[in-house]
Length: 75
Image 1 (cartoon, one colour):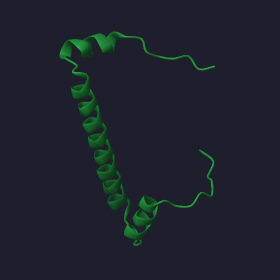
Image 2 (tube, rainbow, N blue to C red):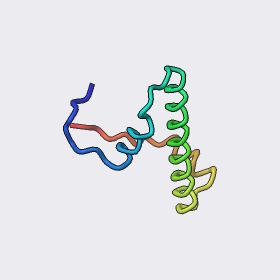
Image 3 (tube, rainbow, N blue to C red):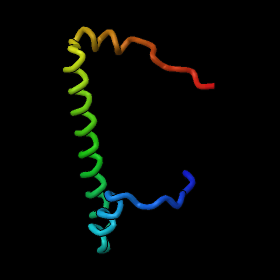
Image 4 (tube, helix red, strand yellow):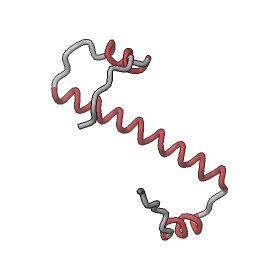
């Protein structure tokens, strides 16, 4: 597990704390996590679509990119 630091909470964190000031059941918390993951997935998809359109990529570009080795070695 990552080390916890004592940085001040940002606006989003504070608002989430206020929002969840009441106890949630395990099922309710699971539902909230699923909603948040869906929100983030949609955001990533939107950003990827914007990049795709900006670059003018085609289905052929996607095929080519899927076959490229793009890994970078880490020292």
